[in-house]
Image (cartoon, rainbow over all chains, first blue to last red):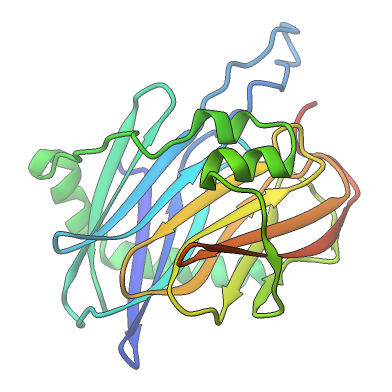
Amino acid sequence: MASIKMRAKISDGVTTVKVLISHPMDTGLQKDKKTGKKIPAHFIQEVVCKHKDTTVMTANWGAAISKNPYLSFKFAGAAAGDMLSISWVDNKGEKDSTEAAIK
Amino acid sequence: MISIKRRIFLKGSLATGAVGIAVSTGLLTPGVSLAAWSKAAFEATDVNGGAAALYGSSSMDKSDKIKIKAPDIAENGAVVPVSVTTSIDGVSSISIFADKNATPLTADFQLGPGAEGYVSTRIKMGKTANVIAVVKAGDKLYSSSKEVKVTIGGCGG
């Protein structure tokens, strides 16, 4: 289940991390056009990114994040070749994680 | 412009794909807890309520050190790219609100030590509204807002 694509690039000591996740991010408000029933809410609640054992970023999300979420942030204190790990968990308890080396 | 960036990004991601596969086959188990996820904040129906539930306070100062990059007119409310950059020192959290959404809080980013004051994501907006960025630095809250006109709403259907 490779739902996460992450790329991290270091420049002048600052690492820029870009993440794309495949996820429906249903709000619970939308109706299924065929059945007329509401599509239940299904969205990512938490994304955690770690460098070594330090959490560099924790994102808490509501359903108002777009489908197939994109996320980008920057942090200092890493070196090229270091591994970054990222994981997400949604409101149904589904989760996924991956790792990428900083370039 | 956006699609070109995306293409480059996807290409770059393929290179690291092998590592990703190794991880997703079970070498790494995420120890995720949802302790930080505030149900009250995400279900609050106004910006002040959301901020109060999230930070314990809704008193914030307007700051011109926060820059919100978002389109003036969003053709599709389902995908509104928003970037927040701040030059305030000691930022511990950045949250993004869309004040006319049924539940205005869209996201809250807790930044660790060493993180720069920058986050970028894509949000859904029901209708034309102010995008409000709230930055927490030390014990104080700072905010800035930018109006985004939405031609097609993205929260229902």
